[in-house]
Length: 332
Length: 266
Image 1 (cartoon, chains in turn purple, brown):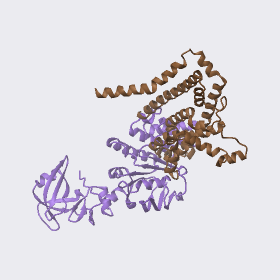
Image 2 (cartoon, chains in turn brown, purple):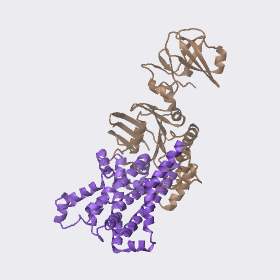
Image 3 (cartoon, one colour):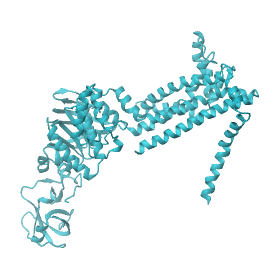
Image 4 (tube, rainbow over the protein chains, first blue to last red):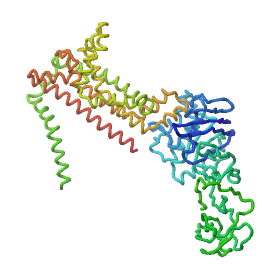
């Protein structure tokens, strides 16, 4: 299903969750809505779902205006961050809920629920209650429950936010594989740029109620339209008044045109990679440079050395207008 | 040492205050064996009191459970206009003496009262009948279900209801199949408290009852009446019956609350 959101605004009292937001979601794709907490991304998802009403603007699903259509009639599946499991029902009853409400024949329910439980690797746990499942299992159950009604659109609100790192990693890879099998148009909300980069076809970056940029993960990483997007999608550092990726800085012992002199303050070895922190001679914020261990050896760098830094040709650079909105400096 | 003194002090205090008096009532009741007790509870006056208490309870409790679930849901989901006022009104029976509530019903339903005038004009007697006692009982046992379910509904959150909605359930289906089962123990607990209050109420029903022995007395009123009429066997027997019912309710509540805790921990 294709989704068009046109000029949607939403306020909660004085708080502007969305300001005149328009986005397009392509059918069959896995789209990430990425942004910091409180930026409005969950509100956008809930408005697409019909769980929240926009103050103004229109939502189209498959070209038809659904702005005033109830959530139950939009043909969507929704997965909540905290599972929203029906705690008094078994896994089986949770997954079959939508089919029972739709008065599906018993035989068909049995077949469909069995297939789904296999798909989410919960076959054999059908008689368990949600309280007897791990967080990851609960979320897979919630996903099966959402998929049971064969939605044309699957919406996931920070689906892995409540899970620990290892389970998150497993589930996100699994979600990507599932999407490749099922091909349901999927939108998921996340504040984790790595999660968005890793599994989505398209990323919509939302901040402060506005769409900052939309595009493919590579497109956004390589050609961010502003310092916010650049900072949110990956590590950045400031060199000579511009934002640049730490791996795009070249280090030299000789001064030449356009280089910035700096004194090596710290060398942090992180296995294969080494992080160099240098203080510009002319003053200003320390610069972080990402190098390999071999490069450090070749350059014979030590703390206290003066080096000359410049951005590699073709590196993405954005002039720093004010302070970078997100101090993302995680070259590791 | 001081800790132990405090513990045993409190236990001794509870024993003196609660257990000993109830035990004395039980002892006095069965002083002359079981048959006088049976006889006292089989008199037509005693049977009428038991029946009236049950009648009032059977009517008042479902009214309050229905009202409590609806109102509790509206309050927890922030759909209630003037929530602070509604909350305060619901809490009145906790704060106010039951006699005052009885007096309010008396004034409202009596001759010249707002509702009473209308009822008398249409020849529907309410005051001094079981109907007024039902009204008074509904009022005094109003808050229990609401107060039990609101925190549970708030903890449950709106997400299960929304999940049901997205899966195609109507608002009623979502409530009936998802929300109500999730809060069932709170409803049961609130219902038990409502039953206990409805059966045990004295002050409020006393004011609006005809107080005619054999037709206008609930079980607690009957106990009071027998004490005043120097009929100790009947008073003790009826009193003990009330105590036994309360005890059963207490046991029920304790087992329910431990069950509720068990489901939560699981």
